[in-house]
Image: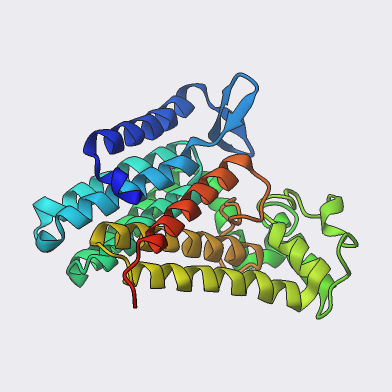
Length: 301
């Protein structure tokens, strides 16, 4: 039962382990594709930030459900939440995993909105996060070039915008009906990381408009039903868990797909359940397990 996560000692232990693992990444992590976000333990390699997303949602759910009557008091609610996002998003920024930093910020903002915090506080938090992100990019030149390449793909298609440009060519190649499963050319090396960050381009090329509707529609339904679970949860703790998980999947899908089609910065995030990546898949399945658990104890309509 998800009520086990009301146990402060257990929640503190899980949070401490995940945050500690992300600190350890800074010291002994593996640098892959410009980000130092992976940790090797024996034969296993995993990305601790994926599990820190779950810990953050559980922490915020427990915290907000116990203090929901004082959401307007900054010292009681706002400042602790700001501290949580500074720690989590800050660790990802130090790892140069800016995509995950965006997800952590988005999760906290979404849960602040769910808790009915005063709008001025939410707006001020959003502005502060945006300014902090701009400041980070100012000192991370390589990341800045890659993230902003989508603004002028024609000029950057040979270097920082190469992946997105090739992804768009693959999507265009798919057309309405697609080339057929296994017949796409994007995964032959034309689109780097086609199995991971750019899996949506492969789906769009091989399955055409049908595949894109299935993927985007699937995420829309997942978020919609996740919100319905939150609204029908038997207690506020479960509602925040369901709402936080729904926000996570929705935001990450938007950022990934938006980056692949050149409408948003390409952040190197996985597309939940579809991209290659053990840590992402395990964390996503744990989150879905929590969401199903909240649904199991939902109020009868």
